[in-house]
Structure formats: C-alpha cells, structure tokens
Length: 334
Ligand code: G3H
Ligand code: 13P
Ligand code: ZN
Image (cartoon, rainbow, N blue to C red; front, side, top):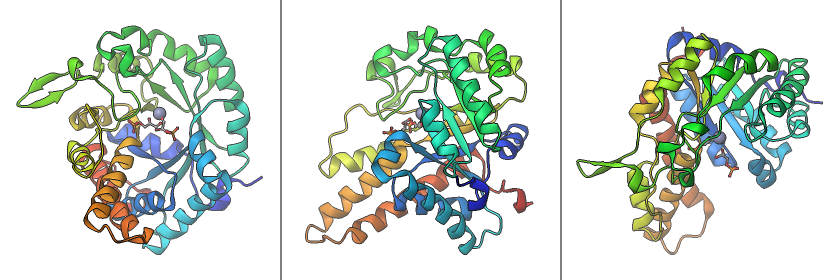
C-alpha cells in the first residue's frame, strides 16, 4: 500500500473549492510518457498553477502503473527543483471502469480516481460509484463520477439531447453516491474529430461547431450550487498543429475541436476541471513530424523529443493562462 501523501501529491478537494469560488478551472492533462510529465510540470511551475496529471487504463497498459506512479512522485520533486515550494499535483485515474481498477490505483499512490459508470443503467452507476467512494474516502482519495454520455461524432452531437446529463438526476446521484465531483455531458466528446464539417457553420472561412449546452450546465449548477463539475473531451484541436502534421506527411482530415472561448466561458462557471489529452498528442506529433522531415539524417530520440516537449509545454501554458485561468492559483502563490 502506498498512500499518495507519502509521494507529496494532493487530492482535488481544496483546489476544486477554490476553483469554483474563483471562477476558473484546473487543468487535467493526460500523460503516458516522461516528456509529457516534464512539460506538464514545467508549465504548472512557470504559471504557478495547480495541476491534475491523469492516467487512463490505456496509459497504465502502455507505461506500467508503477512507472507512472514514480513519474508522478518525480513530478513533485521536479516541481520543487524548478523553484515551486509547495506544488499542488494530483495523480488521477481517468475513466476507471471497475471497482478493482480504482482500488488498485488508490492502493498504489493515486490521490484521485474517476469511476466511469456512465454507460451503465442509472441504479448500477450509483451502486458502483458508491462502492468506489466508500473505499476511496477511507484514504482521503477523491472520486469523480459521470452522469450522461459524451456524444461521439456518429451520434450527431447537435441532436443528441438525450445523451446530455439530465439535470433532474444530479442531486439524487450526488447525494446517494457521495462523489466529490461530477463529469457531465453538454456536447463535448473525446478525440480530434468531435464534429463533422456538416455539423459546423462556416464563419469567415472557419468551421465553427455548435455551442455547448450552457443551458443544461446552468440547470445543473442551479440544482447543485457550488458542486465541482468536470468537462471531458475538451481539446480544441488547434488548426495550426493539424496543418503542420498534414504538411509533413500526416493525414488528419476534418479534425475539429471545442472552440477555446466556449471553454473559457465554462471555466468561469462551476466547471472546475477540464480534461485535455488530444491537444497534447497533436502538439507532440506535429513537432516530431516537422523535426524529422527537416532533419532526415537524425535518429537520436532526444533530438526530436526535445522540440516535442517544448511544443507541449507551450500548449499547456496557453491553456492555463488563456483558457482555464488557473495561473497564479497555487495556495502558496498568494
Ligand atoms: O478520455 C480518454 C483519454 O483521452 C485517454 O485516452 O484511453 O487512449 O489513453 P486513452
Ligand atoms: P480530449 O480527447 O478532447 O483531449 O479529451 C480528453 C479526456 O476527456 C480525457 O478523459
Ligand atoms: Zn474523458
């Protein structure tokens, strides 16, 4: 058993309280590699932001849970080495799908877990979430749950009202499960292809997707005042990175994300955690493709991973400062 406190990590409770009250959101960046971890830490330290480093089941399979936990421990020490006296770093399980997976993470240094029962019938989602909460809270680990299904592009987001979180369910769900935060569905979705061009409107040559369902968010906020809300699927799919990827041999067609002004607006509400993974993948891939195309004789991974790390760091800083507003929000930054 390794408790996260031994690793210098924190849970989400205090940072969410401050974020909801302060009208900003905490970044939740997925990581699978050392370079992503370094870029996240450098960005968080430079901006004095709390940060959630999250690990999916796929990341655990790719990189090994023990290695990722030690990377998170290294992240805390690295942040201190970079001059941050009291970093606030959460190690979070993203989209845990079973009690056993959540328990394994809680027992092995995670300070927060998500139990994603959103595809289960309502009562089964409640039962599974409550079981995870009861276990996690014994160790002061916070739990994110999910209600509503994130629409995929095939579900035709615009018309997929039935996939949105039902505001009339949230009080019952939060009360009966005891979860610490709630991921909701208001029109975001995972990956780099969130909307088809047909779902978008052409404005000044740019494809603008339909807006998020802010009316649903407002109703949820009214029912659960001050309760921490989470948005998944919140990459914006920067078109300059897509263009770079395509210029240097990639083939990403109709890659469309959530406009940043929509996320800026959401950050000011009870949304206090915003999940971003795809934008990091795009930043890394664009930099690597460009470097290798321009330096065809190079084969030392450090040569192309360095610009990839720099590009991710730049993207993370941009999100923190210009979209989520969590810069300068460390408790010790006051
Ligand atoms: O929500 C999913 C995250 O982007 C993680 O993706 O399962 O491919 O690691 P992954
Ligand atoms: P994106 O694919 O939009 O980056 O979403 C990531 C996410 O929600 C991780 O849980
Ligand atoms: Zn997600």
